[in-house]
Image 1 (tube, rainbow, N blue to C red):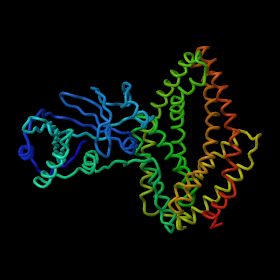
Image 2 (image 1 turned 90 degrees about the horizontal axis):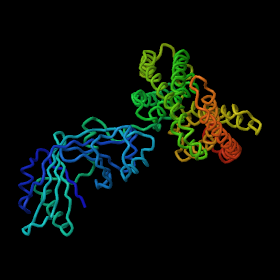
Image 3 (image 1 turned 30 degrees about the horizontal axis):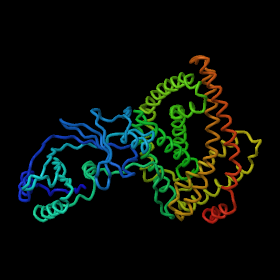
Image 4 (image 1 turned 45 degrees about the horizontal axis):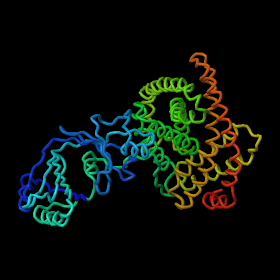
Length: 505
């Protein structure tokens, strides 16, 4: 059992050891300079699941450890001399299993680094039995931390010593991880990034001010992910970047009249371009992530034949990633992003937009209700004979409704709006699966027919078989459409949509 304490400001190491000497013989086993770097994903997946990941280095040891966030107890460790990187491949074991299960496709990135002097101490009684192990971490910028590593049979003794030190020296129980203290030095805190929208709107807020708040929140996400996209740290940076861009495009198209028409038109063109230039790289990220799944869908004797296709995907990804990075470093991108930020900070325009003074609740009701009714119209017209393009158009309309509901969810009863978003997501998932199979089949077919990057005949045969497998999955996904649409459009849901959003018809 470990007991953790924070030392008061200015408490010298020799003063602490002097106080400990009154309870037992104090033995300094080891004193060493250490570096501790905390790691997590960009979106804090380990921290959110109660895990601290530390890479600890000293002259004698170097290891990656996983600890319980609440009690600091170590539950997995891996000796390694190399700092984690996005290309790290840890050997099999609990560290690797834990990281893979929580991080999935996200990279393990450094969060912050602390330097400290570590003092490993033993307390022995008159019989020279070890009654307590202590670790003192003496930081330059933080108060020292003292860990009591209790010994079986001497727990009460450790508690008595801790109580005495609390009264005499003012040590206190450490009630939060050192990581939080370290981040505080940088003006940060854990969970300081999330791709989820958290926008709180006042129902009577002017629409132009509410629109700027929504767009500003999305711009923060774009800027937060920009460098990760350029460096290609992991595929989720580009995913979150693109979602923020798509949401912005939806806002500009669905909230017309909130910004002046010329401003809206200019930035609609810019974000449309940004969506286009990020699509090829994102698609390749998806294909690469699916490659192992593709292999499993084929007979074992075709697995090796598929490897040249993987090489082709990797080559295409490298080329498209470089092209995307160049575009995000370009004057066009930088200029437009600065202009957009200035636009959102502007207090007024020479000419107010026609809907700028409308309260945001009224506008939200109108836009959500209109888009919902469009889904009912488009979805109800789809039959078993409808072209794939009809389902794709419905999918795009569903995305618009989803984004609108997420923008404005703070204006409506929490449980009811979340229920409708969940119902809509169910329909989106079916439409998304169908569209994904369609796009994958088309891309794989293009690769098989590409004469410039000609693949070996066995690989083309394997891709032909893969296309057949995807076609069968697409057909199954298509059969799920009608039940999913009927569930979304059922009377109970319709009544709830009407009660929430049809107040300004």
